[in-house]
Length: 130
Image (tube, rainbow, N blue to C red; front, side):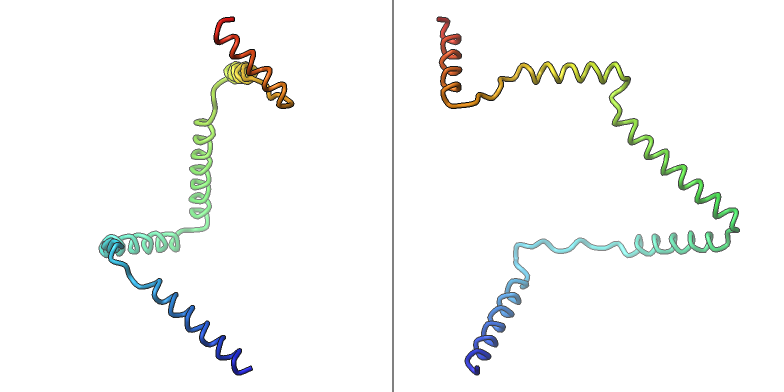
């Protein structure tokens, strides 16, 4: 029992020291980027000002602001879907036909090795002009 406890303690010590060594700073790491404290403070002050303005608003003004935000989000979402559209239905059908023709032009998978070998022989005959 004492040997087991001693082994567990030694293993824990080994893993702990390995983890500590892995966290030591390496010379290859770049230093962290400097933080612009003035910009952070300006952002915090702006956020506080917005919250103070919202606290002063009447319930009707709050509802109007929410409706405005929803409308803006819907417009952004509609803009995203419009960018993804390919155009009219006729354009889409033409694109589908072109995709189908391209897939038909590709060779079909052959069921076994003998069929593959025969197809390869025919291809070489066509390429050599015989």
